[in-house]
Image (cartoon, rainbow, N blue to C red; front, top):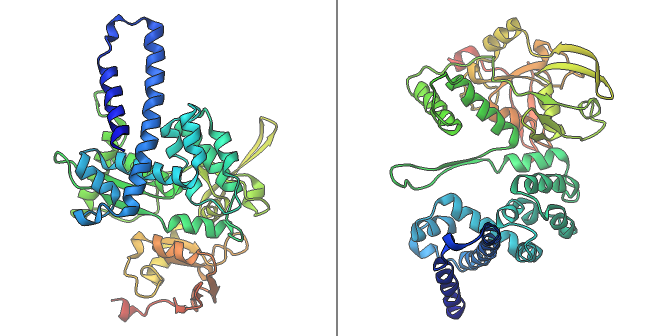
Length: 396
């Protein structure tokens, strides 16, 4: 180990001693590419050391939460960089072909890191070689997209689309790293649709930039989040039925359940078909009939509860119908107990849920019993819960 590190020091010193001003354009171009390839190989080697150190638990005695925090505190690098090293090490450990592709110059370390989720959660019989071949020569964004498509084709045996989306949803998180120079890095992990809603909401809060606005996009989004939190602290955040728009393009066959082709947002995000079908229950739908690339017809169908129905739900349900939940009606969503169009948009088929319990109601294995007045749910673990409307006195 020490001999290898000494060789690395020698190589770094030799590169630092090169008079770059004396090099030709061809030498400079070749040098930039070659050094990047060496950096990628060193990064992979570094990530393997990180994985071994993580498994050995070197961070536990230092009182750190995980290996990434230990790296951040020890080397003064960012938590994001440290997390990337941990992820890359886990990727290489699970699929040695990734390290081989990086060593051959066929894949950058940054592109390799985007394969982490696909590689570490791959079914036992999945062909990882086909994934590696598909991403060779790809930039990180293209590699990530290819990995997502590969995962859609290589799902765990017996796992339904709804179960797969629920598994992703259960991994949502918000994590804050220790402050550095008075700045704390907060990492938000959300399913792609909720992430798009999050960004659109921040854009809506902060508004469009004026002519003299010199803020970057990242700074504007940060200001939107600060404004939203400040408004909440002042008691000025109110509920409402209007939301920042998320535009989804969805095939008719997938809408009816005859296929599982993902929907896509205007930003190119791929949304699982089961999620898009769920959104369609309470969305503004526009029919687009095409012949080749020509648009033949446009139509609009509104599936939202009317304003009068919404007010009636507020009076009847008073808030989220899940027993013990105290989220008020203004922060709840109207849900069809029997999805539209099989179930009509009537008060007997509509109830209010908070966002969390709305998702819980749609989790795989949950069964709806009765209508809005006699509502009970059988959860996936066979627990029966009573979701009938709360008496006025109890609600007060």
